[in-house]
Length: 565
Image 1: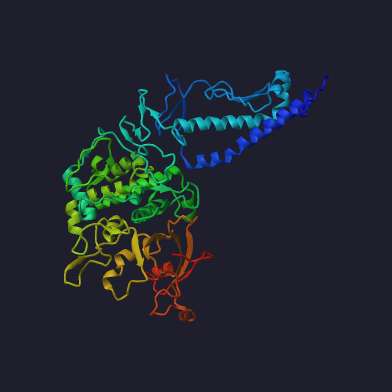
Image 2: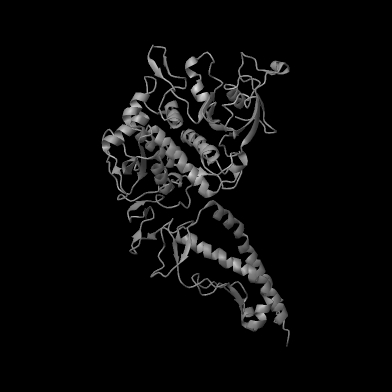
């Protein structure tokens, strides 16, 4: 009777039983193991909060973005003994597989020592399953991927499914204040500071004037693409470690303009670093943050006429209510303004509050634009503008685009509405304001629809020849940054004969800057290759045409890259 086989083919032989159980567990583990790749992808996309182990009085779920409190009991590795698959008795609880035939569990008589030796080859698999289930509990605790219809607040009270609580215990509509589980277009809760941090709150008069300076009225509010825009770098120590990730919409122009100042800092301003292209790829996360803080502070300080900079941050309190002439956006009304009287103090303050500009959902680009306007002051802004430009943004395709005055304010510190030098008369003999001084970062523009006979649209030498070889480019409406690592490029005519430029367009397919080699010599055998003057751009790419607005007879070698833009 050592080996009894039933009519269905089941055997009571211990060797057969162990083999059947082992094969079943391997199949079960393999199915769970398939989810690990999906988990890895999830962990790469989301920056999960730091895990801490400290004692707690309850197992209530914590708020997203704060340290997760786990029970003191450790997570024991799962074991497989006596036909029962268990994940232990820790924080995850027991998990038993009941798919085995009942009679197999009754007849299984194997000692613990023999079983452990038989199942050593499954130890690694079961360990990783325990790790997977641990993270599932963490995601559930943070309401990631959960289908629960109700939540509990800190007092144990139930909250309807269409509401959540923010960090202050205030109920909010679902999707605000927490990472969404199903919606991909929700904007996370902005980074906020305490109302007691200093500074002074925005008033209704200031908020109204701010809206009018941007939109021409106090009724319009920023579109979705503006609200989700912030300053975020590519991965450190990569080909684009120096570069910001740039989205779509009107905020993109501001991001690329700030990018020019970041390159200025990384290449030419920071101390103790070599001025070469390879140094841009060896940027750490800390250096990225220092570069962003220095760039934002330098721009705001220049806008404040090197006298004062104003930084706007969001607080938890609301200072402005809606009126018939002012529409709330639940963001501008919570601003607090901080005035700084030194450039170094401005940089330190921004670095200490950098999360308010680079955090997802921080409205970072809008905050910077607000800070730029308040640093310039409404009085100076009114003097900078002219009859051709009364406000800074223009509506376009359901959103808003930056006018030239915004870009010039970032580049030069003055909100000049035009790109020519000095002052010129318009078609109606009105006085139009242009650029008065050279700036560190220049500007190039080329559009296929622009006529070379239009003198008011031509970029002047003040912007074409900046102090440093960095240019913000507007090529057929697409912003990009062109730069050289040779600081003397624009001060030595010999260097301008043959030199290298790098182009960053900010588009997702671009994995590294494009290396361009520019030759400004005029060769007689190349004249036949020049474009027909009656059809500008017919033989050259838009990038080449933009470069040729600065170096008219230049030929550009793309060094193997397919021309784009």
